[in-house]
Length: 194
Image 1 (tube, rainbow, N blue to C red):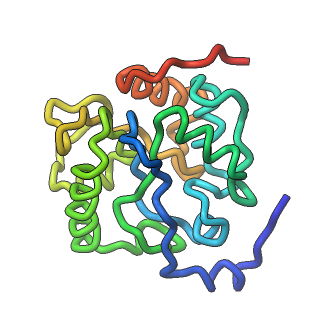
Image 2: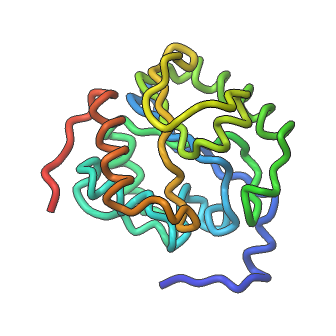
């Protein structure tokens, strides 16, 4: 397994990670809060070893196998995600050690930039991974998890739990149920699970 020292990771503070998006409009855009330092170091969204995003995608039937993201996704894995109609981006582009380092103004500016990307991409469904961030960034303090009554730049909007290992309220299985629901809403046909 790849590992980084704290000093090595600190060198990635403030770096950005390119959006994972293909040339054709995605069916589903998953939106994280911002890149962590491990994500910035590997240039792979949700890459930290404790993050449950990729295990939950597999458990949901979105990917055929669990993608090994810890050292960075292989090109074939990125192609699988894109081929399934997924895109991945963040509300805020700059990497931090913790999402708590982001200001309200930065989150709200990030929401405006996200809206512009979604207008270009025109996805069917947007899944915001993190209810607290969504509440702050989009100034919707009463938002609850699940499908929202409003759309986001024409896309059906879902707010789903954050897959971070720090979110003790969720498991791979509970996250998989959320991801399967948004994938079905986006028209993605799920694989049989192992």
